Image 1 (cartoon, rainbow, N blue to C red):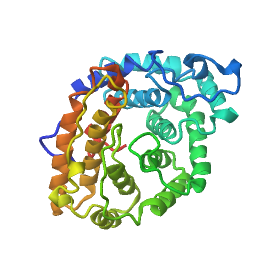
Image 2: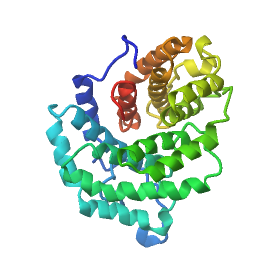
Image 3: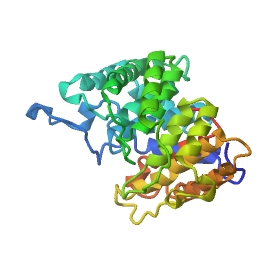
Length: 342
């Protein structure tokens, strides 16, 4: 549940986000590869390596650009960009192109490709397309989403320790998103593995110091852990855990967690991550507030912090390509938090 003064996802904002994503998901360059080569013959351009996801600066940003477009097209089917989105999906989300993405994934050198962030976003895209009943896009993408679900199942038993960074390797973020897919497709084995892993990694955490942000965070290591457990624990158990994890929230402590990040240079791709931190904190704060009891004094504080961070991030979704190719996704997460279930 969001506060009444906070921005909401309007048709106008949806149209803006859709136009931004349509402008970058097929833009070929600049592009940053996550590509381990076994020989000279594998020195290939992104469009050959990745028949679908070769835009948006990197593979994972392209995947969540498609997620954003799919979600907006479903929520706002009458918006002007909807026909263009459908045409893009008709052209790109085909069995042949999915087979090309699967072939890349099957390479021995691709075992760690995009783990875990890209894995999680692929599952989010797969989960979203499950709601697009009767479309060829859903059926075409299913084998690719299942391949990444199987990767999670194989990897999590080997993952002895969580990764608590504020960037792509964060494991709490990956588990939170993967749980959306597990629920959407009734993959009970994946859901059980995610819950067991999260409990083992995070349930004993208490008194989080919130030593953040680091200079290129786009996730809050503290809040995304809480958001992960919010999704996976029964509400009464989550509330007890959250009270131990951040016992001074009602006093806006730790202070660093309640202070929006300063972005000194939006043309620097790493520093621009901090705009995403503000948006992802807003997403987590809003979601967590919805799980707190109505009479919990922390609830109003969390909602206020969500508003502050959302305002700080939403103003900079567009402007420089280093942020423009991905920030709308996190803006959408924040705007939908507490309003439209993922």
